[in-house]
Length: 217
Image (cartoon, rainbow, N blue to C red; front, side, top):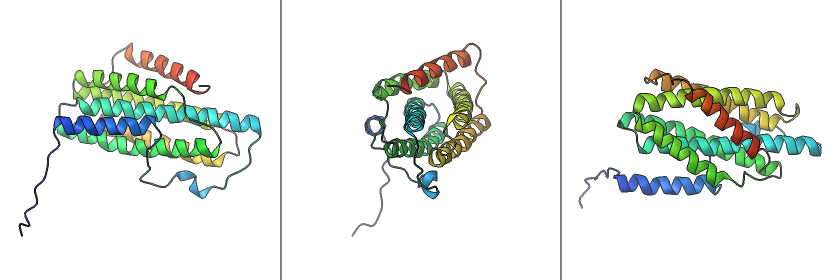
């Protein structure tokens, strides 16, 4: 019996099909976490209806943000010029998959749903990620730095706005905030370039629009 093992390298078609599978899993809510949710160590506390709706709105925004993060990383990885950069983006995306699954689980616990516009958010974000990658790996990594910097600030804001007794949502967001900061630091260490104005301002505007819509829809 031949015991030689053949290693199959992924072709462009393989990566495309894998990307389609990931996209469908992301927008259809089929993402599965590799790590248990940080909320696991906190008991569920009854929330008044207004607090429940508010917490659910915030977690819906965060879930949509993770859909966008998956799409951005997928778009950037698909057009990365260097294999090491592609692997770096895919590793970060794996942690974002955990974030996505944790937010989806928390939404379910809060008896609410993800944004109805997630397919639209995904397509738009994938296009932005692909465009960033076309400017080269340093620009693409710089885009990661700025994105994660803004996400970290956004999560800090949500931690202030959550109902004080919603410890389960808070634990998720605190872990996400720590990991988003690490993604930014790692991308900067790999040579991410500082984005010129007005790109960061445009990114904040687009993010603000997404947050306002996803909180309700």
